Amino acid sequence: MSGTTGAAGTVRVPALRTRASARATATTAAVVLVVTAWTALTQPESRVGVAVGLVVLAVVALVVRRTSASLDLDAGVLVTRRMGLRREVPLVPGTHTALVPDGSGTLLLALRPRDAARESVQVLAVTDTLVASQPAEVLTALADSLEQHVGPATRGVVRALRGQAEHVAGGGTPQMSPLAEWLSRGAPGGAAARRAGGRGAGSGRDPDGDRGAEGDRPGRPG
Image (cartoon, rainbow, N blue to C red):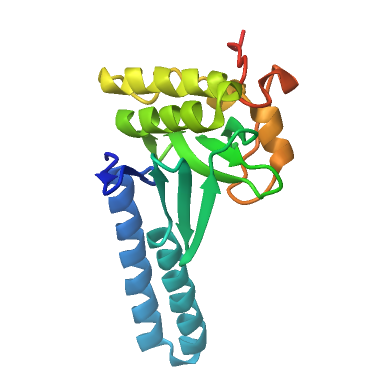
């Protein structure tokens, strides 16, 4: 899995997944389809329920396929797309930034411009079924954009992203990466991100409270 630099300095921020997890998802979907078809053939009275199940499966597949994000390096704008809905999140001074564990083994980079809903992108995942980190070039692009467009208030988050990028570029594993410990012990800027609310919200405990409100002075968990 790697980020892709497109025209006009655009970096794709991929959804975190591994080939194994993609295969597992495809296998599960195939099994569901086979069972559904068998039920429809052998139990005609269940066809309405089968139809509903197929619609739900199609919607879930569409949501997964239609979720994407990209970063415009020149303009300093994160663009997300969900179910055909496009949203632009400008990275400007005053934007709250935080690294927030979502409680299920995924670390999110949460962004909340003033007077706007929060948006987030995945940075790291360490779960029973998924172990993956964003590529080094994506992490570096995120850090550079925050530093350039949002400013000094993000320096704690920027340092954390750069440290993760160096670890990944050096061949380090997600489980042993600098950000992995934040999944269970808090992340820089977590308090502000919880107050921000909105789409893509995660939850977590920030041991430093408001001291990391905008990515500043994250501290290390003791």
